[in-house]
Amino acid sequence: MTATATVLALSLTACDVGAKKDTRDPQAVLKAAAEKTAGTNSYRTKRQLTDAKGTERGEYAFSRKPALAETRTWRPRRKDGKNDTDLWEEITEGQTLYTREAGAARGRWVSKDVPPYIGEEPPKPEDAQKTEEGSLPDLLGALRTSKDVRKVGRETVNGHQTTHFAGTVVLSDLLTDKSGAMRDWLRQQYVKKRREAGLEKVDIDLWIGEDDLPVKGAEHGKGTKGSRDLTEEYADFGADPWIYVPKGKDVVTEDAYEQELRDADRRGIHLS
Image 1 (tube, one colour):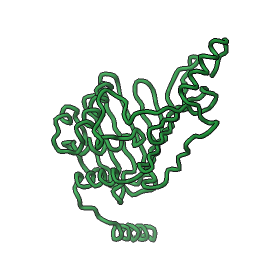
Image 2 (image 1 turned 90 degrees about the vertical axis):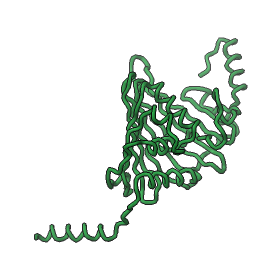
Image 3 (image 1 turned 180 degrees about the vertical axis):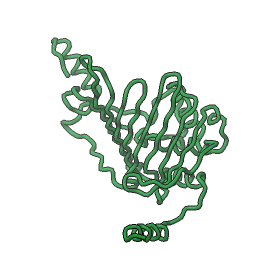
Image 4 (image 1 turned 135 degrees about the vertical axis):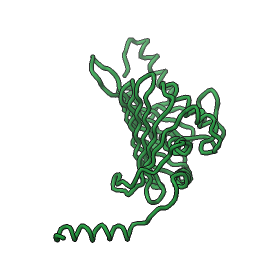
């Protein structure tokens, strides 16, 4: 054996000896990850969604206590015959929502009070899920219902040692699932959104770190409206998200801004 081969063999042996072998089945690991994620006060998400509309990127952060959330989303659009993106920002403090759009309100945040949920059928309190949590709760819950969920292998992701899990979720099966991995309201919303995208099944991948916290998630589906690909990366579980809440002259209320627009329109002035 050459010197190089000897060093490599010794290194691999040392890694094998020092590595913690996880003998749990996929369901046990995913359940532990779901419980740990739900119990953490905060985390950050980097998200990319590509579908028939184009590619949307997002950066999310939140904390449960105090109730704070932040979203920066780059949405695709066509401008002057070319592909472009619009930056849309949201910050939530309790039930006050601050929004800022590039080129609008003279760079100020527009504030308004919003109910905990806007929609036809509000969820039960235990079903409430922040948008800024990304798709992680959904991916964890849905993958746990997959009939072919499996452990793919060990992989390094963003500097973390992870175990890669994968499975296919058939939406009709998910609707009738009785495992309790996803609450009824969340399960129905998950299926509704994907069927609106023309999907009937999705492939889900999750990379779980040695501390049972997810590092990366992915979802792929192809249906009547084309392909839909989602990837998310997670970090800073439990850390202070350092969300800045706009104050003072940086903020205008929605009512005041709409009045500014009406006044400007009467004077024939265009306000951005």
